[in-house]
Length: 203
Image 1: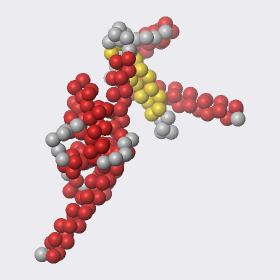
Image 2 (image 1 turned 135 degrees about the horizontal axis):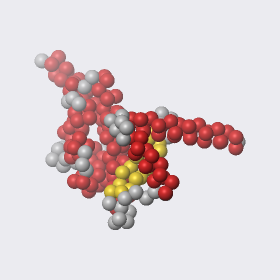
Image 3 (image 1 turned 90 degrees about the vertical axis):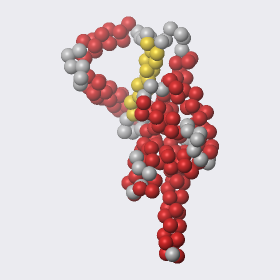
């Protein structure tokens, strides 16, 4: 009986350690420091007001789970661990924590970019019916972002270029998104290299 109690105690301690690691990773992903209660309060304040206008089903379902007030703090941590780790915390393996970390960072990033877009939309004139934000992150960590309004606010030269791009895209629309992403990455990479060279010359 003592051996059984010792084994159960050890399992409980392992689970408690995992819960603390889950809290640390979630706090880190959202740039928050504090308890589970403080993290949940932060999520409700920053993302709760916009939940109903979120269209992506998967992200909305995850956000709904994160905003669930019906769970105690321990149950909430376990719920988030199961959601982003894709298995209950009792079944986690060594590699599950790394998977959870990546999913937490991705989830936090999506929410922050989306709320940023919502705030920009609120600040735009009523004529801007919708907004799309485009982000490109390089392996160096440098991020480029653009906000596109509908109707678009572009110079005449941009409109000419866009018309030409539409003509090319029409020849193979299925592969166009990947080709455009690759071309954009090449342009930004070339710009980054030139910027680095220019900084070297100015030293």
